[in-house]
Amino acid sequence: MPDIDISWNEGTVGEWNALFARVSRSTLLQSFAYGRAMGRTYGHVPRLGVIRGDGEPVGLVQTLDRRMLKLFHDRQCYRGPLWLDGTILTPDMLEAVFRRLRRACPRSPLSRANLLPELPAGPESESLLARCGFQKIGTGYRTVWLDLTRSEEAMRAGLARDWRQRLRGAEKAGLVLDVDWKADNLPWLMKQEHVQARDKGFRAMTGPLAVRLRNAMVKGGSRNDGVVMVTALDGRTPVACGLFFRHGMCATSQISWASASGRKSGAMRLVLWRAMQEFKGRGVRALDLGGINPDTAPGVTEFKLGTGGEAVETVGQYR
Image (tube, rainbow, N blue to C red; front, side, top):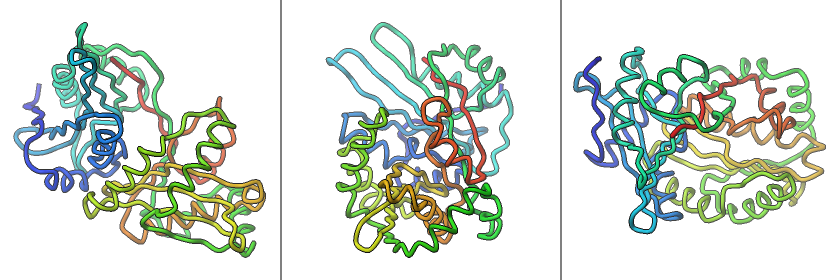
């Protein structure tokens, strides 16, 4: 086995954020801003781990810890570990890291660990996790990643034909776009999100968590964090809106909402296209479109796949 170690809660948050900014595909749930927002909302304590190979940083992992009834210890690690740009991963390195994680997340009558590893679905990843003592309990996470390093022309050419046509229609519809890098109207958007979550039967991010995450990104995050709301207006009436969080070199589409008239005009395509250009102009390299499920949300899945992004699926949920 290679010389792999995980150093927990060493150094400063600034040093962690500097390393996080070197991750080519960072995930929102592994950002310290998310950990802090979860702590203030649900009482989790972020635990920051720097993965070192032969003494040099090669990756990062954040767990969220919470004690219940003063006895039971709950620990979760979602969408990590993450790897610094340029790290060459070998099967032995991965196994050493997950064996270290198993020790850091023990399984006992008074301790529970939930992991959603950022590993590709498939028998190799499943075999690796089984060897390291993890048991699969659920399906993985599916999403679409958009490459923002391409030119605007290449990104438009990569759109599905219908997607591109509807984007052109939205561009000609006379809509006005409001780009808000402080997300001041977030409470309004969260009301729309909870109505559509109720109507469509999905679980939405709570308003308090969204607001605290916004605050952590805007006020207390690193210079590589950020939040933006892009709203399409027909006159003074909002017809579509998207909430996006930046974390390091990447960003995540968190909430998408459109009214009936906004859906008819294709306004959400215009919102997403503008967000892509905004992030690209600020050096963001990739956009995570925030999850797909062909079985329960075929329309959303088709919309996201129509961007021409890369569909990915992680190995599953484990204990």
